[in-house]
Length: 200
Image (cartoon, rainbow, N blue to C red; front, side):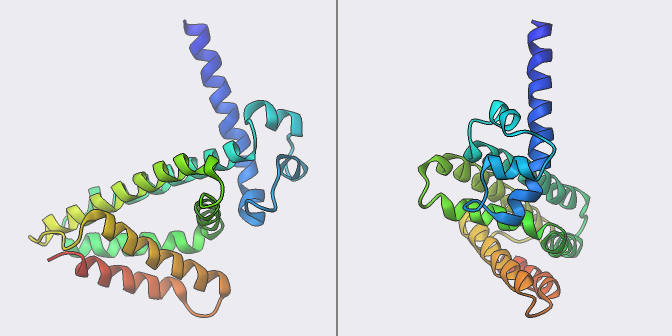
């Protein structure tokens, strides 16, 4: 039993290592322009090794995005846990959103690419729905805690609140990647305003 668990842990560790190596290529080229062979050419791993640990690029991409998004969720949960007032939570949440917009723009672009591809590729849909649910739960915790701190109640269903923040972030990402305006500063301000609007 211990040997079996050990092998499973090593297998998962290797998958994480491969996924981290593949993320840069995936985030630069996107779904349509990336194959396992293309990833192999841009990393130190062979095509055969990638194919051993991942069935195809669909599995690799969804694994990468799921892994990255889990880190994002932890970051926001830390903001929620640390905030003692509504103002602290609002400022921390807005700062985290603006910060990840800049630091992780290519990763977020890959997520939106994956979600768009799920409209055409049924193989992506279950994973996209699951990741979306995780992100919605994160927004639920932020909005719920903010409402508690300001002695209010959420003004929208949490699904609608998530859609609002997600749309705001996606538009900011496009502006940031286009370089047409100071998108992070605008996103920061918009997030604080929206958080107040979705709470009565």
